[in-house]
Length: 236
Length: 403
Image 1 (cartoon, each protein chain N blue to C red):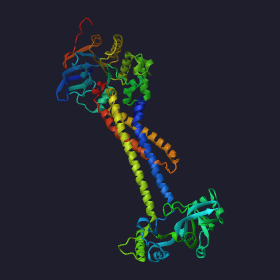
Image 2: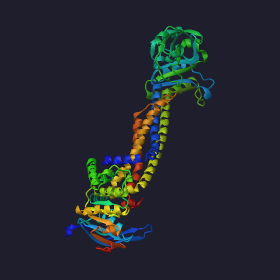
Image 3: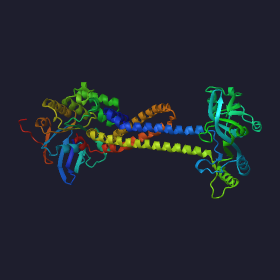
Image 4: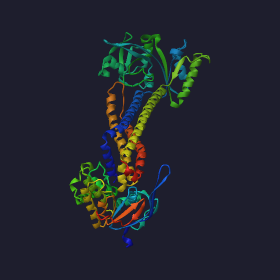
């Protein structure tokens, strides 16, 4: 059903220009559809454009050409900061490889930050942040600063932050890249659970072990999608 | 939400205590300087105003030319005074007096004081008021009586502190070794029309007695003319000059053999020089504030560069440009206002300390605090804006990539 499509990309291109004016084409016409509640893994070679594609979906990058429909609305040409910030704040939740928590703030304040920018009162947002941290089994670490937490705990805090404003889409860039395999698998279990809550997940990874948690693997090479339904080799 | 961002800005500054403090040091110094300097300026103005409060702005004084420009024939005569009174228009009153330094003694206490030989209307022209006893009257002048009226300072010099003016009446002192009876004591008057020569530290005697007994021919003679209006001061001076040149039979090529001036303009000059000094000091303090603003700008640039990743994260989770701008602008304004507050406090501490020193007169002024405060906040806003704007315009992906 067309209504089920959350993210739809049509011939999306992205170029960078070097200081000498040389054009670097990172994405060379990407077509892609992601359904509501789908867990998609983006795989491919380094420099293949996975992260750039994720950043475009997350409205961190403007696209050079093509169309980007988010919940049926073409937002590919939107450039105003207010709208883009609103989308990032309410529609998307980001999870990064290096966690990207603010070291000055406690776990609780880090998690609550997206709601601060959304203008939610302190009382309400800290109550919600505590609930999410409890749900992710790190409710006993709310007052710890990132440096006082292990990698696995930091990534849980980062995931909690991405859930803060109840976004429909979770974007993850190598979320297990800085973790050992045990912690990595635990994080993937959390991601798998998002599906039950109807959240759409787009995750960049180069690890097959992680990618196998996804419903579907999209394989990229040289700025193009090679395979929208990539099959892992059977040994994983 | 604005308050929360403000709080975050405060926390960020607190995390870098030493740097924050160093960057506001200039503001602290600048603001406290402005406050002290405005206090010094106000003090000087007040001092001048106090000193000359009894000086009539319509006074013209004529005296013998002295020093480099002296002419051998230079001499004023009592007739000059009468001539002025009769021939110059718009005059309210005129008087002549002689004065000189001579030894005045009471018992074992003796001092060299300024002694005046004056007429009755002198007290009126000089705005001198009686504290106790009586003034010199016509009878004293005619009879050449040996009486004296003391200035408030002269009373202290001869009789010591805390001596009641009324107790001095009837006491005998010696002026130039001649016995004289005190008939009156004046109230404190402040500065006189003759600059450093204060009426308070003077002894007043009848003109006739002084001329004959106390001062003799060496005394300096002066004519005081009181015009009826400040507007007539200039023409009055011109008329008197012309009149005296004719009277003294001066040729056109010759310079004046007398000196004519209006003491009111001395006050104006003193006030304007105090103003100039204040302006100069405030300018220096302003430069200090501007330089410290550049310092804050520099620190804010470093802070933005250091926290680029943080800015990227904030943007990725939904911060608008405006939020980032607000936060960094808040940091620089908190810095400068904080510095302003410390500076204002420091100024209030320095002022009483300065006043303990001899010759210092600093008046704490509210306007100084307001001025310094407004200026420091403006410095923070102005110099913080560009770094904050730069931070808000960072590309989120580039910012996230930085380490």
